[in-house]
Image (cartoon, rainbow, N blue to C red; front, side, top):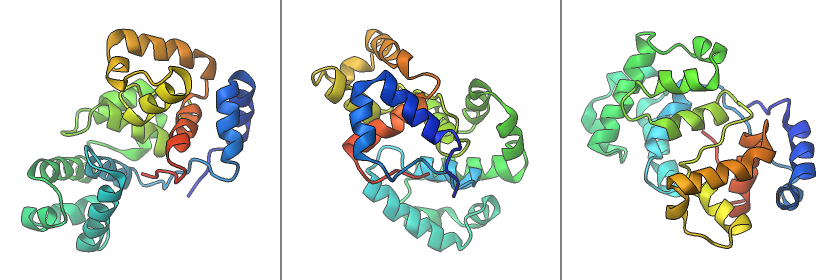
Length: 213
């Protein structure tokens, strides 16, 4: 697993720019974002985790890993739909996971090519896969490619943390609307070019156990 080389610099810059983040960073001195380096597994895990709790997603992922023995695109494609459903996946997630595996197995998605793309190009490429929207592509940018300046405006955890620490508990539903998004973007302007790092620490303020994809 790889920690970003920019992490110490980003922490210093954010702590200097934002007193709220400075307090959160001080409370989490020995944890950092890491990448597992496996593009397919990162995206597959994001699909598994859609619309369910982290605990439930971990349980499904464990059963899927056991069923596939080695979690590769071709291993997923060799498993029957009934086997995948038995792991706890819905019919729709089985379709999404197979489409993802097909994209990787045929070379339509090449991890080496993704590394050379800018953030929006990666998002455009990945959202061509069924079941992968902008949020999942942004999680890939953060957790696999370790891109430093991603601000996932659809992430409910980020919105909850911003509401708690900056907006006196304002409804996250309000923050999903256009005006709410504009407010968050203005708030996050001082975090650039380290908005991924700010997001990660705001997640930590809600859950001290780091999420990994």
